[in-house]
Length: 300
Picture: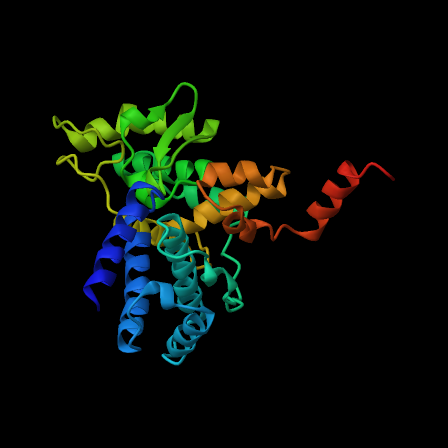
């Protein structure tokens, strides 16, 4: 790669971190995508980004598509280029964002697995409240379903994030974005039971800022721990669906929408920066859609 391209790439990464506030994983992905593009320019003998036209961008996309990439990976390459050229325009390195003219491959999005309310209740019911770990696990499952937390947010939850009396959680999600989400009375009851009777037994005499601890060390559970627990409880509850911690997040969003919640409110609860990400949850059944229409449409 040409040295001047390396300098621009480094500046772009700083832009992603400090201005766009993207997550570490997203920055790594954008770095890789743009690096491939700049290497392509170097191999093609292109000496300046000002020389890049739509034809060059299309040639890059064609060359990437020949690598048997998944459509999602190719779409991300194009998204990365659009963000990169937005940065270049902002820095006055180029005059327009030609990457916006690239066609994005159409992606068939699979609907997420969702639990019924009865399945949620069965799953939570198999946690043994006579055991400290059962109290902990019940509180975790109630909170996952009641608030739509990411599993990474759940395991790193601290007391400073939790307003137990008002049933609210303050979170800092992807890209340092702050959001406040409520949780239900059942989750509150499970949390109180765990904090009073389960957590002190697990910790013994140790101290920890984390709410959901693994043992007396005070260390938080890992995402893999939660994944394993949920798989075990699903088997005990006789649920055949492929359930993961993220299934609770899908179920939370779907159940809210099915009961009339506004899509933008659900977007806020989930911490999605783009509402198109939330729209995958709009696979509500036809009966619910008809009821909402009949209630909302003024001309009967």
